[in-house]
Structures are given as C-alpha cells and as structure tokens.
Length: 444
Image (tube, rainbow, N blue to C red; front, side):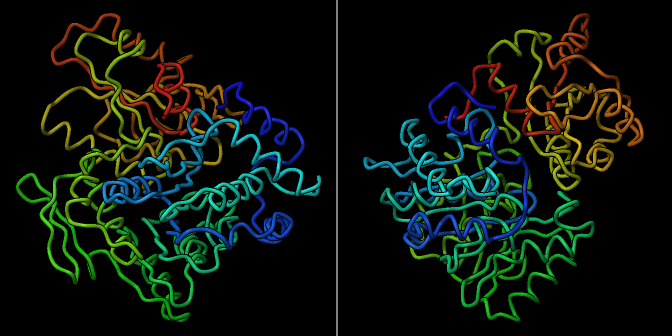
C-alpha cells in the first residue's frame, strides 16, 4: 500500500532487491547500525512495546497522553495502512507530532540502503534502521517503538536499555515464526524484557502467557507491574476508573471504541507512570479523549462506501486478524448491539498466514452473513471461496464477493427493513488499508 512518493519509490526499489517477509535475527540489523554510526544508541528515552494485540492502541494512547502533557514524542508503528510514512511519526518543534516528511524519509532510506552496501538483509530490517536514523537526528522528549514481529529477534530489539518495556495481550498469531502454543509466543515476546528495566504487562487472556513473562522478568531482575494485580481499570457509571500504587483516577471512557480499550488505556497509563516523564492527571484525561488510531474499530462516516449502503447503515472497519482480536471485536459489536440493535454483516479478507476459522468463531451467532473478498494489495490473500468455507466451518453463513463494494451492494440493493444494517470490514490490515485509501481516508 504505497503512493508514488519519493520515499515509496526508494522502498519499492529495496523490495525488488531484498527478500520480502521476516528472517528473525539481530546480526544483520546490528551490522547495518554499526555502519550507520549506531543511531540506536542516540535515541531519547524509549518505551518498547510488544504483544499480539493492542500494541498500536497502547502506543496511540501513550502518545496522545504525552502530547497532551506538552511532550515531544517520536513513534514507530508497523505495518502501515496506506502510506509508508505512517510508520514514522516525528515530534514537531511547535508541539504535537506529524508523519515524517516525504523527502526526509526518502533520504533516510537511501542512507540506510547505501550503508548496507547490498548485503543480504530484509526490507523490514532496513526500515527499522531508518527508524533509528530518524529518531536520533530529530529532537524529542521520548520515543515509543512498536515491535514488528515477536520480540526476542525482532529488529527493534537492539534497544539495549529502554525506559520501559510493555507487553500487551498475547494470543496465537504468526505461528510459523513464533511457535504454535501461547507459551512459546510469550517467550518470544518476552525477549524484549531487560534487566533492571520496568516491565508493564497488559491484560492477558491466557494465564500461561503471564506465567512465562513474569518468570522471565524474575529471572533477569526486571521490576514488573501486571494488569489486575498492580494496576486496575474498569468502567463505572460511564467513566473509566484507573488505580495503581499512586492512587485512583476518575477518567472519561477512552475515545477508541471497545471494552478492550480500557485495558489498553490502563497499560499505557501504567507505562507512562513508570517512565521518565509521568503525565499529569489532566493530560491523562485529555489524551484518552483525543486519541486517534486508524483502522481499529473506526467508523466510516462519509465517502463513496457509505453512499453505496442502505440509508442509515453503519460501516465499521477493523484490521484485527487473529482469534484474540476476533474476540475483542466481537465483544465490542455485542456492546453496540445491546445499545443500538442492528443486523450485522461481515465483509472479510485475510492473508494465508492467519487462522481464519479461529477468527470467525468469535462471531458465531452474531453475524447474519459473511461476505469474503479478495485482497488486491497482497499476493498472500486467501481465495474468497476458500475463506467462505472457513467461515462456514466456524458456524457462519458465508458467500464470496468480488469486492467490498459488491458486498455492500448485495445487502443494500433491496434493503427495506428497519433498522438499517451494520457492516464490519475486517480480517486484514491490508484490506482496511485498501478501504481507507479508496474512501479518501488515508491516515494523517
């Protein structure tokens, strides 16, 4: 999902020269960073975030709170939805932050590629080196760096001593790289834990994941704060209550929809309170109310897609693509259904590294029908007929469609009933990126 920008052209050249995907090791990134003058050693205090689900939301909450507190923050997230620039957000001299300028990114990519000298490496490793180049050359109070895949051998794990390590909920995903059991995946994620560095562990649906993480922390001497043990958050009377050893905060509910966002927001607050710049209570409140995170339970409120839908219909998008994400999304939709009942239709596309039956199972008994669609921006997309079979195996009615637009038309063409339907476009960040781009909603 790229544009014809200078940076995109440079990255496309790299994609044609180096293998796609991941090859988990720290040797190549270490060699490249040495050639670049070790920019990863010149970062501002850094919050390092790993996990299966919620990494991006925790990062978004932390950035929003810090910026509300007047701090300059760099953030690295992946993957992007529409443009490569989304991966790099730089603190702005006048306050706040902005996506990296196209020429600045293009130059950083060229510098990193030249330093690599054509040696074997993955594009993700080069782009991670670009993160450190950018973050070391532009001033900021803090940086937030999201892990790309796993943790132990992820290219971001050259950060030897972050200010805080954070691990968000862990579930099955990327099994071919990380293992086919939650405890194996937790061990890989736990590779970012560093001796003496505060570790904040977000909500864990699997007790074995928490056991693995706390065992690693105890063994190497990392002080641990665990959700529902050392810090707590819950909804009460339409507000979010947060509590830790410092006391209790009465806060607005997070702007991001879904009960799981309470846990993500709490994880961000706990991490910031362990860091070098604990935010004011007012900044926490403002950050929860102003946070933005594209492609995660995001409502489409205008544009061509909504014009195709039946009058009064809702269209939501979410890029979650594993069983844990499916459960969180389904809970959010169940809460919506309780407040404003509507017939639910899923429009789903997935890539072949995911486990579709596990994802779809969360929506059994909720979705009236699933329409499976191709993913134009990935060669790894699951054929819509095969994906429909997976949805049927999970207990859902399903049929393939040629596109998101066709699926919306199939439902809406003769819709006469009240209330109007609720659509969820889901299953892949690639699909969500396509939808945002075609609907003129690229992240900013």
